[in-house]
Image (cartoon, rainbow, N blue to C red; front, side):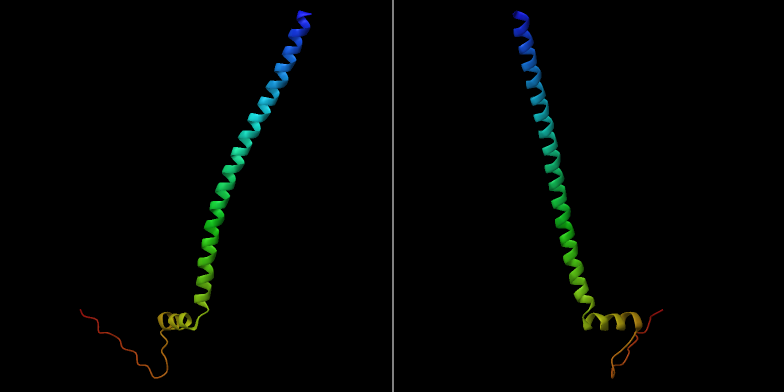
Length: 91
C-alpha cells in the first residue's frame, strides 16, 4: 500500500514538473516574441521617417525651382537677359 501511495505521488510530481517546465518555456518564448515586436516597431518607425523624407525629396526634385537650380549650378545655364558675372581672382 505504501508503494502505491509513493508511486502515485511520484507520478503527480512528475506531471506537475512537466506542466511547470512547459509554462516556463512558454514564458521565455513570449518574452522573446515581445522583444522582437518592440524591435520591429522601432524599425518600422525609422523606415516610415525615411520614407517621408524620401517623398519630400521626390516632391522637391520634381519642382521647377530645383530643376532651375541644378541647371544653373551644374550646367552653368542662365536665363534669357541675364549676364554672367565672374569675380576676379586675387593672386
